[in-house]
Image 1 (tube, rainbow, N blue to C red):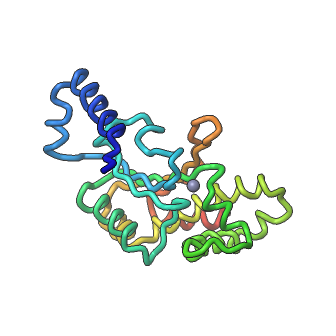
Image 2: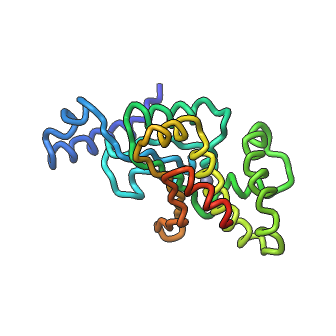
Amino acid sequence: MKTLKYLFDRNLAWANAIKEENPGFFEALSKQQDPEYLWIGCSDSRVPANQIVNLPPGEVFVHRNIANVVVHTDLNCLSVIQFAVEVIKVKHIIVCGHYGCGGIKAAMENHEHGLIDNWLRHIKDVVRFNAEKLEGLEFDDRHDLLCELNVIEQVANVCNTTTVQRAWKNGAELSVHGWIYSIRNGIIKDLDMCITSNEQLTKKKVQE
Ligand SMILES: [Zn+2]
């Protein structure tokens, strides 16, 4: 039976290196997690949450799916948001998209991809909502802009979840951020989308 020994070897080396530097690291972490951040990102293997913000285990609560989409009927994502906000009490929810996203690109194409087309429908909705902004652009520029517009749309979706609405109503300090990562240079860009209340959400939507 193949057991992926290579990965077990790497795991052991990784755990030993951490213990060498900080002997109590895993023991302390095993007692509780207290992350300040919920990361909602793409499943793409090139965009690993902890690594690109250089934070160790225990610092980021993570949800990833294809093209970092937040859908109001997705019990998986909604449960992550509820648990993160109400139980772990994170202070920040970060939606981080990335340029060159294959999911976004697939949504821009007109041929069939199978089951995933149902998921990509949500991104086609983002195209429809922003048709004017995307019109007339070359494919690559349209792709980049759609990656950004998708993040902005998903930030609004996070803000409109019952969990975030309830948290704000109860006076919780909770910010929702929109970021985008470049797989070409490893740098994250803030999309100037930081929402901390319903008033701000409405203002942003009006400005757009
Ligand atoms: Zn992606």
